Length: 121
Picture 1 (tube, rainbow, N blue to C red):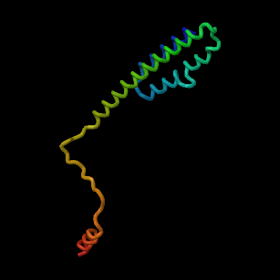
Picture 2: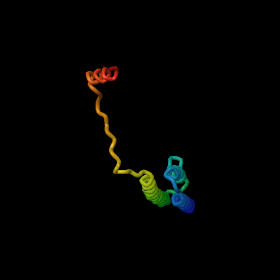
Picture 3: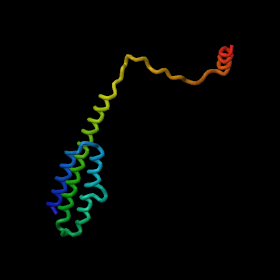
Picture 4: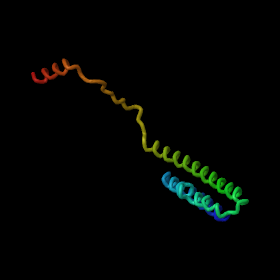
């Protein structure tokens, strides 16, 4: 059980380290920590473990889960920061351009009628 847990943890950490997109990180999270994930399946198989070993195995699984979650969060923050930097590089704002004027409301009906009469004549 311990070897299997170490193998799962190492695979997850390798995949986290090699991921280049936020979607990939979410897929990794679901694969290992999700409802049908590998760590969850390992916890479900604890019924086969001897009763005196269950607390130790449970603690090891929880430690592995905590490590994977922390690495996922670190990788997510790094990738989000990189994505934000790329977006800022693409979006350049020229502050010397005049601003857009917002048109608030509409013209008075008398003004509209007067402009129409001027247009006709």
